[in-house]
Image (cartoon, rainbow, N blue to C red; front, side, top):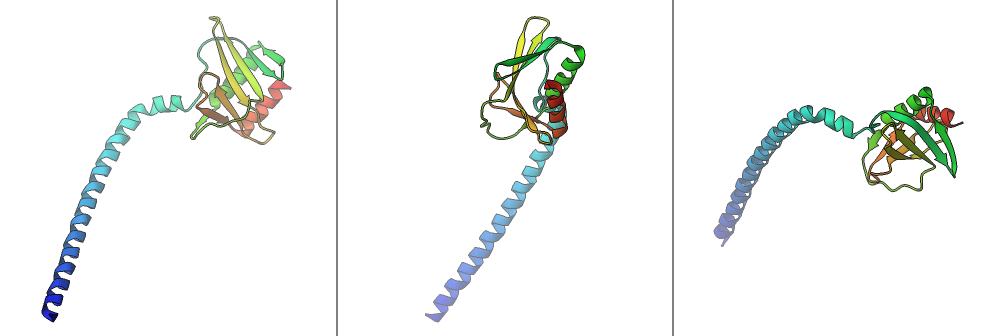
Length: 160
């Protein structure tokens, strides 16, 4: 009986070792495949980096005639070149944030009126001085963009 138990224990140990070695080889093969896929993806990503960069920023889509900022029914029209340039640079400097968008109502609305009579609307959540602010395209409520505290201060000065 002792010989049978010893033989059974030896065969279980050898089987365990063989299975363990086999799993290690498969894991190494999968890792090698993942590395190959990652390097192929990296080369594709380099080619698409400019389109990804564009997707991570907001864009002004034409020649601007004027802009307006509204808050609680009060509307400020910006039709001078300096104000339009400042607000355009604010919008275009916004960077996309990852995650699910769940925001309260915006504090400000910005309308961009183009020379071809088209209009584009942005929702703004203006931060306090020293805080970041958030921007969202009205036609894409699934993406949120943020601007730095320095840019927030530019916006505050512009609307005062």
